[in-house]
Length: 296
Figure 1 (cartoon, one colour):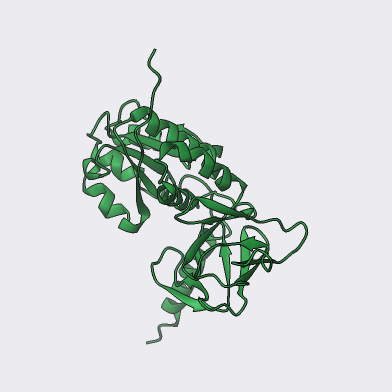
Figure 2 (tube, one colour; figure 1 turned 30 degrees about the vertical axis):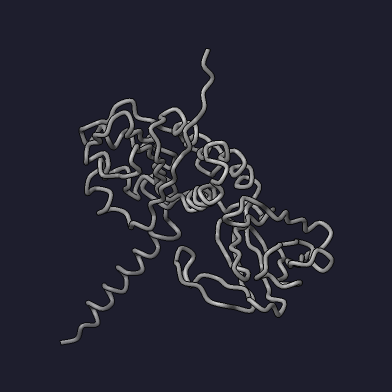
């Protein structure tokens, strides 16, 4: 007996799913994440140092990065960097093309954007919020918004907090679940609002639940209204979060960005709902410095 009829029905079902997931896909709650491309790269952040190399392509469409200020447009003072190490040029959107100039210590990129392993290459294409390696120096392209964000986040960290700022910037680029290790609710809330206003999330609501709903209907109402926006969860004030609310907080249906204040930097208060919904590498923890306050 022929299976042609069954195969034909299977083919039609598969193609119907593809049409619904592409041409007919909705944006926002219940659909695809509605976030636009990042802006053009305007600087390279030198990770771990808190410094930046400004990218000005108005005079030349190709800039040289190197150790020698007489040979390079962008000077990077590091023994692993050659006199003329690499050329960087703009591509459409937030992309940059980086080419090795025959350097001693090379140009490297990650196998996967969020992976730890990397390999040497003659040239690579990178984007705002991604990282690449010249010699032993990691760089991250920034657009105007992320460059401004870096300066606004600096007061929340100690003077040696460049690495923490780098971590927060990466989390903001990828909208990782961000855990703020602090006992200071006010500082954490201010930090979360700055992140919200300096990213694509500002097009949607900033939500801080005054109390956590416990019925399915109430939870769905809160998460739908907050959909695609930032949700600030304060575990310094209330360490108990209903499991059903926690599950929806990390449900891709709502496209929420959780920013969570936790005295210990742990999400244990949210229970197993977190770990069942989210890979561990998508959770970023940064520790905020104690904030000085004026005493009247």
